[in-house]
Amino acid sequence: MSEFATSAGYGSGHFRHVLGRYPTGVCIVTAMGPAGRPVGMTVGSFTSVSLDPPLVAFLPAKNSRAFAAIAKAERFAVNVLADDQVAVCQRFASRESDKFRGVSWRASVLGSPLLTDVLAWIDCRLDKVIEVGDHLVVVGSVESLDVERVAPPLVFFQGGYGRFSALSTVAEADLAACLRLAELARPNLERMSANFGVQAAASALAGEQVIQLAWVGAEDAALVGLRLPFVAPFGLVFAAWETESVRDKWFGRHDATVREVLSEDLGRARDQGWTAIPDHGKLREIESSIARLATGGPFPEAIRELDTRIAAFAQEYAARSSARPRGLSVPVFDDTGRVALSLTAQRLPAMDRERLERCRAELVTAGTELTAAIRGASPAG
Image 1 (cartoon, helix red, strand yellow):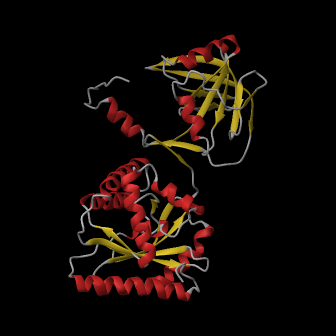
Image 2 (cartoon, one colour):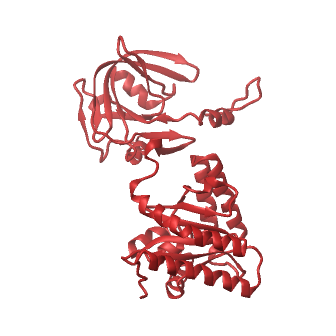
Image 3 (cartoon, helix red, strand yellow):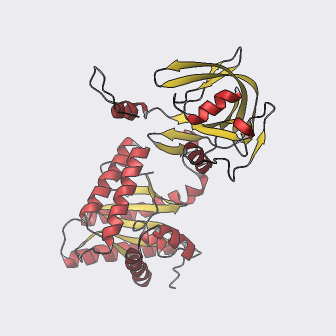
């Protein structure tokens, strides 16, 4: 799309930026094209229009080749995507010549392709096409429709794909035990914060995210409940005692040099029972991204910013200096030897070596005492 400027002074980039604040569902519109070949396109502009008569609509660009084929068919199906269908969504949004290759589907009563495992489908006859600006409003008359399965829908927001999560289910049941453990850790965290002037936190690993469960000494209470990506070099205290397959995924796409340094740090963490977070300018940038997530919400733009900064930090991680640490972390083990909780002293103020060692020793003691309190067992014995 070419850049435009209005009399109000804004351009197409600003227009998309503002409209990107409105989330949309994601569908794939399909039809049987010329020579009986199926065609399809991803749309985020699908909407219901009328109940009586039953009408729906979507808005393709005027120059859409896929819609040109759909228009000739004079009928189409709308396939509503689930949150686990990002790959098929991206395939139909691409310039791939054969978008249906490897995609399972069946024909509707009207002959349009219905994709396997979608949430729902709506089978339509083409009713009318109206030109509006650089797009078309395509209205379909609904012949039949049905729900295929129950699952969260795929959502498009701020240029990224996501999923719907009901507010009433934000606190997952499987985190209840970790939350109770974090409360047990709170007196230790408060003592650490008071004695050394640090921010003290407790976090747990849940799938591919590290969830902040308690935070003492921070001005922003929104840091509690914040979900951060479990990617190297963050969450090292969890990765150190995880399985090889989990660690390999944690490494991500980092090159051999970064992996080698991280592997050494993982081994050092297992040997000494704690890990240090090196002080670095890019780490401070990451902290500002985390603060933005905490205050503004986990929106795609903020998440992409955080991911970009983590990747940049990881590339310089191997060349870090021996400067004083920015933070210290220790594990709390459950009865299987897995890290149930991480206790961290964050944003360490300037302190001499002796005071830093006392801070580290108190944190290690807190982790050991909490492990014993829940009858946990360190893999090292």
